[in-house]
Length: 387
Image (cartoon, rainbow, N blue to C red; front, side, top):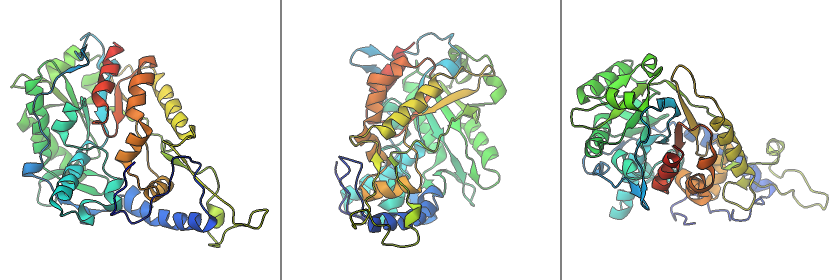
């Protein structure tokens, strides 16, 4: 694991967790979690808004739809749309934040406004929409935000992604028009900012020629039907939905878990004493250490979602194959010199899903992941091999 020298905390060696922390360190971590929760989980980061237009657009060129000779064709078009597997990217727009960060590092202009703790735990993708498509994404989690001047950007909570919404969607359109045998889904949700956001987003989509389906249109909709509904003038197939997704969110599926009690260290920084007179040691399990507790909780969650019978009304069903965040996990991850992208890499979650898990799922519709460019094409191949 590589750790940025700019990180404000020295990394804790978490390769062999449970990771021991003294009572003082644990109490400090507890106090730090309160401030990080306010910043990251509420994602109050308007000062971190980034202008990412122009040269930072993700490449929207045509990519090969073949992995090691395995066809990635859509398969049987008569399959109900909510029973067909799509690889979806979580908080897709945050890839533009990472593009700005990487550019600033190359140019030697990196600052806390394009990096730091907030973006470590806000950025879920490594590149923009076009790049994500090249890495295997076929569905996007798009969260529009309308600024006071009427322009539409995107957001991850209060972290604004100051990249044009229409430019991002145009990348998808360009890619789809070069890959006419593919269907791309856009899940629009979490409209924020000006009160006209949702209305103006739909107007922008109409101008771009992308159909935004009402939930009633999904009832009985097959893949072929969705291809027809999402037909573009340039030959591609892109279909958007305004909601219509069961997200199956489970906040407990975090990369870092505290198997002990932190609250008892609130009152005294010294903490309790052990039987031998030394301070008591606490620790945390991680999604990439020797202990399998956190990974097993993820696998159990995905097994549960994959056993769900698809909804008869056509509602799409999401399985969140990525690590969630809470105040404890953000703090522990920061102390470990990690981030959402690094957590996925270190846990090899995308790779494990592709090689060991996906084939056994009875039902799989929208498999949402972080860091799709880490093994996404292999994961897409595994998803489509189920058909």
